[in-house]
Length: 556
Image (cartoon, rainbow, N blue to C red):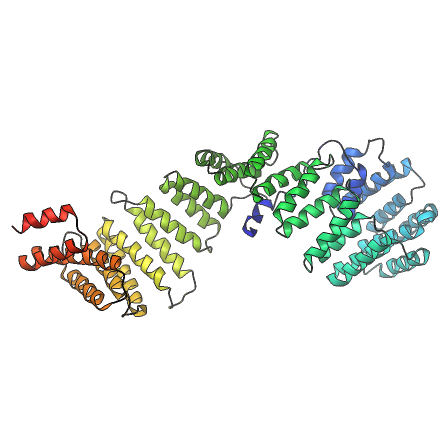
């Protein structure tokens, strides 16, 4: 299932929020606190004028988002708006101090932080740790003394303040000390067991160490706070990342039932339904989003893939054609899976020549995925015929690339070599151009030599000789060849010594070999007795009316 993750690579990007909000602006606050600024801005912008929104808080986080984007002017405006709405809310003064630090005005920043301390006495520890974080985020080296001092003061005010341990965990995470950072996040949970931020950060840090533990933590907060979209979404994501497709779908259903979800959540859900093999539901969501022209590239892909899985091949082909007209960009590109799925659809519709084109496009996407050359080779064989021999050459060349790419060195796999020989045999038999025909024959003979070196001369060696003779037979065609006749006789001799060969295989080789030897004896040697003998042996191996009539007519 991991191979399908490419589909979701762009499905989790932020999109327009669906109107109506369960936790309102607070969802935006939570998004910001876990580093999802884009999602935070969408929610905060759309809830800023809601009656339940605390505008002082909302403007503080909008200001921080603007500052993180490098827009100091806009950030300062947001912090000023926050102060206008509630002059006693301490954190917008911290925001103003952050802008001052960005402008290299440390003294002005200190004045703003003093104001924050003045208005934030009721939650002094929280205010001081936020000031510490501001110094740290601005420049952890230049302001090392300042952030350490404020962090120390925060602990003096209230060592049970969860934000202290969130900050310490973040600093350790920045140093890639994930084990210890998870420990601090767990301490934050202990001091504030209803704060989703600590749970999410713990899960994100600990997931790659113990996914089950991380998921259980998220499940705890998701159950406690069903209206927290952040908690619900993060749990859904962790189910997905842990390949728990069914649970991921169930959890994402809860997400999209939350009126604060994004359209990007709906596109995610459409993809996850596909993973969970609920193809009909996936199609319904894809069509719904397409009607709004939301992520048409991804949604058209989903329509095509779902139709293919449902076996609706004509509809799948039509959906694919629409999908492949979409322009590619940095976010969305056509993948190997897109092209190989389309090739499978085309093959089932009997459009093998078009399938060849699809495989060639897949190879352009990833020329080092050597299994694609094997698939291309097989598609070429199905597309080729005596009247259209060019695909036989392409089949041989593709299969040659397939086995050359397997890092065999000189130790090629025998079965693959036998398949490669059959590819060159077809090309040598049907290609019209004399030079190309000879080139295919010569390459086939080289492959035979490699096979002959590896083959067990005591078991099924007749098959190897029969393949060599078939190559010569195809190349020389109506011009019967002495060397070819000798090789067929060698195959018969090897078969006679092989007690383990199946009767079916023996009869197949005996029929082909005796027919050629008989034809050579009749045409090249004018030895009718020998010819009749071998025609009769061919008939014994595979009785059929056509051969019987021929023998009776030729040898009255």
